[in-house]
Amino acid sequence: MTSDEKIAALRALMSSHAIDAWIVPSADPHQSEYVAERWQARAWMTGFSGSAGTLVVTNDRAGLWTDSRYHLRAEQDLAGTSIELFKDRLPGVPSYTEWLAGQLPSGATVGFDGNVFSVSDVAKLSQALADKKIALNFEHDLIGQIWADRPDRPAGPLFLHDIRFSGESRAGKLARIRDKMLQQDAQVLVLAALDDIAWTLNIRGSDVTCNPVAVSYAVITDSVARLFVDAGKVPADVSTALTADGVTLAPYEAIEDYLQELPAGATVLIDPDKTSYRLAQSIAPDCEVKQQTSLARAMKVVKNATELDGIRQAHVRDGIAMVKWLRWLETEVASGVHTEVTAAAKLEQIRSEAEHYQGLSFSIIAGYAANGAIGHYKPEAATAATLHPQSVLVVDSGSQYLDGTTDVTRTVSLGSPTAEQRRAFTRVLQSLIGLATAQFPQGTTGVQLDALARAPLWAEGWECRHGIGHGVGHFLNVHEGPPRFSPTGTAPIEPGMVMSIEPGVYFEGRFGIRIENMVIVAARDATEFGNFHGFETVTLCPIDLSLVDFSLLSRDELAWLNSYHQCVFDTLAPHLAPEEREWLRHKTRRAA
Image (cartoon, rainbow, N blue to C red; front, side, top):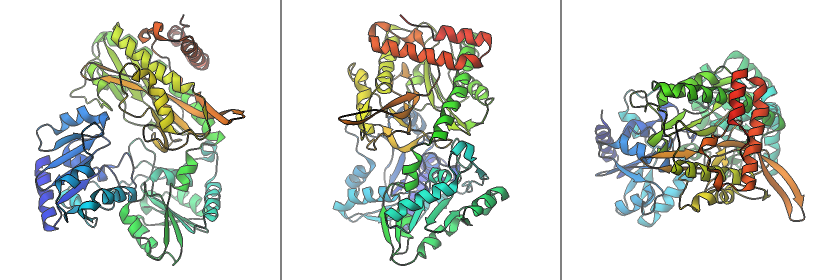
């Protein structure tokens, strides 16, 4: 079936259920950012495979909303279909809820699968459509009725995450969670987010590509923790360890029946951003439901000392791999035989040789020349650009290690950079340095620091069309909320959090620039004005000096660059072969 044929089939089902519009988000029942194939309904319907996007189908129109990371890619993927592209968050472009309110008559009905819409999303949708008295229907999975060969639910096995990496036992985590539940007089905590469950129970899985999580639910009470998961996914050693710590196993599908039978008057905590609307509706009606950020989610973003040490060690191994790959790239690019795909494959191969390696933390983004301006560009073998000794290459990559997750971006010149490229690179570098060296008072939020980092770009009349950074999990999801540096980053940035700093600027049809380091939020000075925090940079990878316009750097910025490169060399050199060490010495040489 083509996309238009699928949309026609969907419209027929909509008509049979008296539904005037149908919404297909990019989500699973756990509100994951990256989802297993079974729940990639929006990609199946549209042919657009970016990680973010929403399809809306009415009786006579169909539209896809996606953010600036994917505008160019979506235009290509939607070509030849009847689906209109709405470039979300650009001036004059309505959100899909605003568009629905304008398109539908009063009294119309909007439908969606309640399993893949969060409580928060339904609340926003209901509010946006309230003035026109538009009804919501969440009872059906219409996509499932037309997706004949829909993949099964993933069945990857669980495995234990050893305490020597996690730094805290599952019994200790459960005790801390229960203490916080007691403080709120809550008897039940529902965990739906896969990374929250993995962190709480010290388990990992392989159900979502690049994200070491297992499809499951968990419910914690004052005396029992229940893990709702397919029985075939739980090896004997995992079952034994969980049972020993008071964790009871139950079938994945049993979660709704369990919630329906909760005792009258129980106070139930749910995270409205991570709990599906259908799951929330299944909670016994005589319970009191409190909506707040999951206790596990709030706890796991602040890493313990063992986790932080592991993250530092993971970055040493990751830095060694990056140095080996950058050196390989420099020697091989002149051959003219390598593409974005083969270069990415070589980086993955080098990384895979490191201790504790568990796979990539996301698909490698490798964009050469104009492709570097395409947000979250994913090279394909059939269309990948061939690398030549000219222009620039943007490579965004990371790994999952048992002791940490990494995420690093470097833009490298493959030839003689132009003045325009050097100016753009230097402004982005100044953005990174400005945030990496910032000191800020306790309580400062991500949106405040995001604006601080954008100043060098704004001074040129440029904009970074994505957040400046995000939280990073510990051998978990590479994107970990709620902390983030973005216009929507309302969470305070606190010591122990691990973040990325990744400013970028992209010139469509020409080239893109992005530089990314990971940092640990660290406590700094206490003054008469309160406690102040700053950042410890943990990424260890040279920054391409040939792309720096040193006339634009201040004395302090130059000092930071030299100090950073000295740290990179001193840390990585003992682990390198002599020829690699000399290459790194040159790449991290002191700049005047």
